Length: 67
Image 1: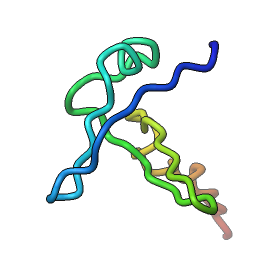
Image 2: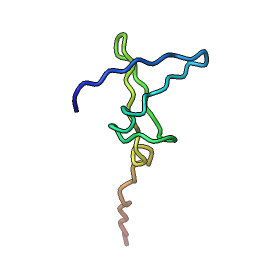
Image 3: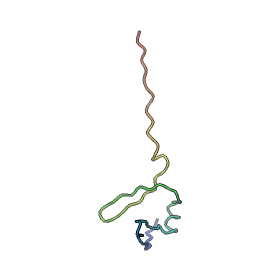
Image 4: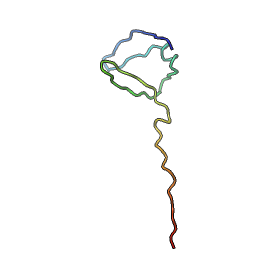
């Protein structure tokens, strides 16, 4: 993926529009969940996938029958 820079603006409510072309390139859709991370003076957005929200399944319990 090549470097693509577009200019956008922060609203009074703290919202930023991610340009359509960038959303298309990344496959992001309305309603996607995002992780927001601060790195120095940058903000990094990552789309979270459904499996990122699923709890890890516990391994099956071991049962030992003693007489």
